[in-house]
Image 1 (cartoon, rainbow, N blue to C red):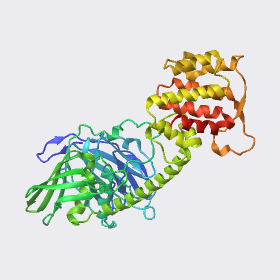
Image 2 (spheres, rainbow, N blue to C red):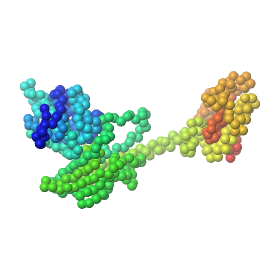
Image 3 (cartoon, rainbow, N blue to C red):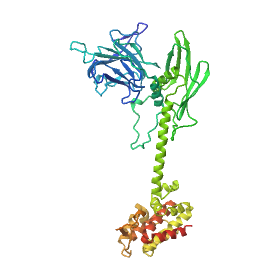
Image 4 (cartoon, one colour):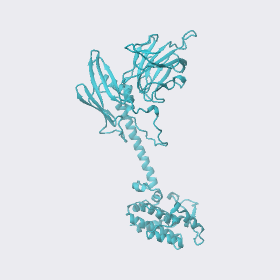
Length: 514
């Protein structure tokens, strides 16, 4: 069936078949972005429809649990007149970025015909019609089934929800515009999660892809003169600047606040482009037009303007943001203290330089046995660090009886002469050199206590390890192109190779590296 426009022309419309939609708790959901969060029900709405944010709303039935009949009609333009034969009619505007709309039961019940219904992309106006909304306690077998019909058409302007036809027996719900405005502003400045990402980000959801959709206009009308706030609207780490252009025009622009309140302030603006606020008066009252806003922001901005116009000077989101900032600050301080405690345990005191903290080798183990020595190595110039690495490697070879083993002596001499080590010491972390060490009959075999943690000192049953295996990493460390990393690893492994003489070696190292 076609619709007739104001000029009498017929334009095509489309409609789904009537489908049985499972409902529960007298509710069903209409959404253009599955799973999107929004305003709680009982915030704004009437006996038939409660708004739920930019992408959804809740419909209310007479039936508590069971199935109703529902269908969706998609119109190319607004209907000329309100259809008769219905008990209640309400409408609202929602944002549809992908051109798909679904009607589902509150608990997830679905009718296939009402899933991903093709509708216009962008802003759409949705008018809900209902009849025969009878509850189980009064419904009889002779009563017709409850029916809900949704009419959908494209619009370029976001206007408030409204009751078109009130159900005479319907309930008058309390309206909470302050809570709606608070939710709306917080939805525009969401805090990023403090949890580290454990999975790569998902590709852009097609439901959220509004690339290429035009900007829209938010419209609010009042019968009395409109008072628009000028200057700065506080929004935590951000602010809205309303600057007067002339008597009837202002610009709305987002900016970072001069004094952010969160320990990790927001730096991304909800919209980088300024938009225009125009005021006009006419015989039926006064109109505010907020032009050039992002379509996904239109619903929230409409709720914000409703509050600003009706309650000038009130910013309910500010206190909520302050409470969130106080909690975030307390958590950041707690995290800092815990991190300081962990760092003290890992590093034997305050964290060293960033360069040392980035090392992958033996920096932390060396810090735990002699933190001042680690700092001393870090403070040396690169040439001295390289010499310190060679000095430590020779001491390790000497204490393990390897200084006179031919192939080891040659490698050590190469390093001291600033020549490359043989490939057996440089490839695969020196695995070939280690295998040669274990198979060379001239290599002595002695053991030393394995005390990797100072807390193990004084304990019983200290394990032992082959002294030569403990010493060789001090030599392979010289293959590292970073002189700091080479020095740290060589000194630590040399200390371990000295076993019970570790303290004497560390004292000698302090003297040698002064």
